[in-house]
Length: 273
Image (cartoon, rainbow, N blue to C red; front, side):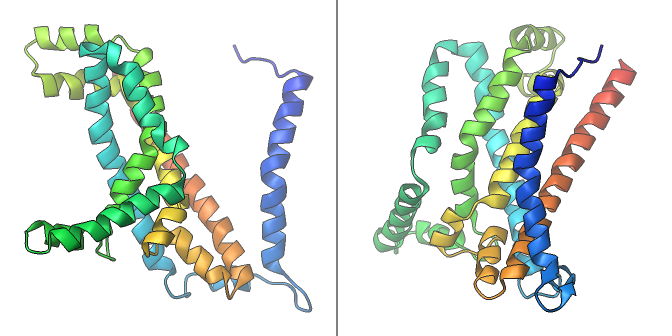
């Protein structure tokens, strides 16, 4: 039964809508209302032809996909193993995963820069020197993926932990194992389908984090989408705001696409069941 919305809830929803819609509406008005020329959409029509737009957006999307893959490959087996084999270590892992929230981004970047400088100076005669060079490739900076994985840990851990709390993982794994499934197969075929919602939430949060992250990329000298918007804003204010509005819409579209894909698979599995 659908829950009835009380006046208090309508008021909260209205305030939330105003909080998001007022700045968005003001941004759109700023981009289309040119003093002396009236309403024009030049700021939006010139976006695709602006130098660096496509490359920076593709770079951010590639970084987001890589970050989501790496952080889920790390955290899903760890979270399941923690729940099955060492539940007493869960507070320790929770504290470790929450550390990126209390470490300022500038301090985090300073640590990364120190390591990147220390490596070439002390490992220049070893094969590891090429590793330090490769992870700073401008076409696909792996060092950003590593940094984003660390920054996404708090959100991914929370999402997976909430999902695992709602599932009897031990019973699922024992049932799969009793049917002859190996540990990896039990994890993939029995546990992961029941964590679809948690995996989608973790992916949503990581995608939003990577698309909007600025400090680390800027200070390390790379140019993903957020940094490109900042650079454009220095000379073309309306273009910068127009790209920000467009990026917000693109992010929403990607999140809705992921939610739709997850919902479609869930309905298919439910229909088969």
